[in-house]
Image (cartoon, rainbow, N blue to C red; front, top):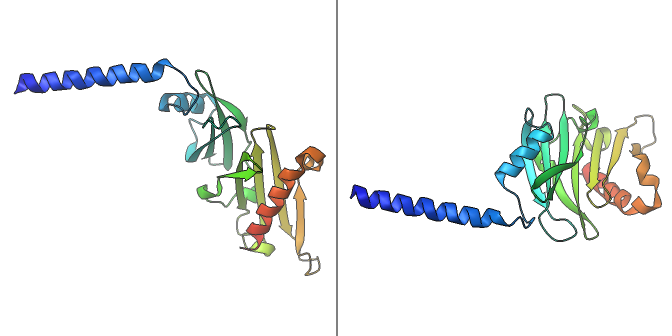
Length: 197
């Protein structure tokens, strides 16, 4: 019985090793391994941060070659986008600590959205104690892997403004460029949804 069990264990180990070797032999850029993700997280400086959410998504080729990571280093939320290349993953973009406009958020606010056919990373939040729709302070970001740019929208309630306008909506300067109009439209849509929840 013991000999039979040892033979079974040997066969399982051999098959697993063979399959693993065969699978790892070709780096086809579809998906990633935990080892590659771990190496990218360490290299990106995320190893000491608490990771809340990880999403994989496609690039223009249709391959799952991008990963969005939401983390917190006690000082605030951070978003990192990793890109799959031969041999592993590298940090394509990483935010600084996000401003107070994002302080109160949920990990589920990190999402993959679409601008036309392009998949983009989106995240939103609000300032502490100021999350009440039109009476609040809100932030939203959109990262485009295609253009390698991040875009921001901020809303701040202003009690001095007439009831018809309530507050001010401002955008990052790069959204004034004509080539970025579609990203601005998406952020306007996102912010409208946030304010009317």
